[in-house]
Image (cartoon, rainbow, N blue to C red; front, side):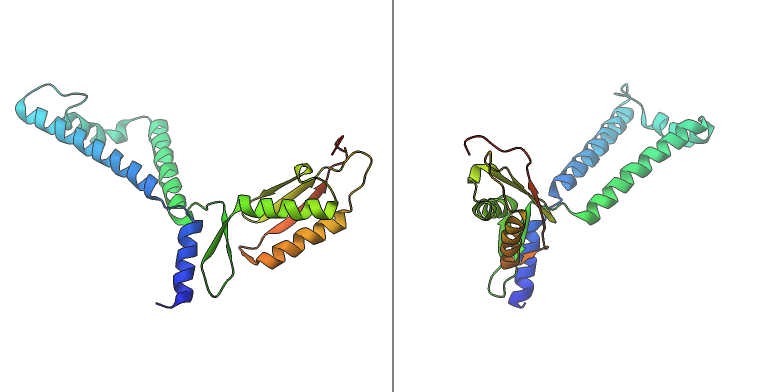
Length: 192
């Protein structure tokens, strides 16, 4: 296995959540249903009263399904189809973690979105000539939203802040790439 493919695999593992939680929940549900059916079958063989419904009455209920009102069959079919659709979408989508990877030939580097936001906030505050407390950055999968609150009576050069943020994002060479959006608040902050 080449190092490039190993790094890709490591980066993918660190930026996507495993679906083991969903698999465990589904396995527990299946085990409980099968255990219930097993208990009902044993009770039937022993001649004891069923817990909820005897296996014969469950089977009879399934075979009598065509005689049920149409709306109940349609509602049941829609419910089963929705659960199936959710499971298929979940299986193929894979949950993304709040992380990005740095493009590198020498290592697999994963950076948390909060670290990226902190670095962008520091550079944006320096470019805006404001306190770092007056700058907030939110980083999502594809976007970095930079909010700068100027000190009362001063102005902030939006182009300078945008340039500083874009320069930093270009230097990081993140995968997937992040677009930035800079918002300069209209109301200043006293004593900043």
